[in-house]
Length: 105
Image (cartoon, rainbow, N blue to C red; front, top):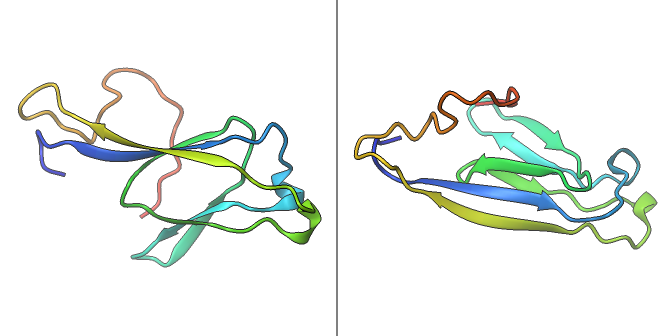
């Protein structure tokens, strides 16, 4: 990342009031291209995934056990602008304590 330049993010929100990801599937699959490893996030009502927009990902279709239930999600594209001319856009949380993220790549 170049200091002082905007950071482009995607915010994925799962919208279903009910979704049994273990039984019905339809995860969002993330791919780490250098290692060819993948990580799956199961839909969960109200779950929010915040990611760099360049992260490779795809949605897997619900399986037969889901019946005809659709899986809904909403994606926001965010542009985070620096407040300072040379601000490090990799450390946006500052001194706040956030849950440990799942990192890959």
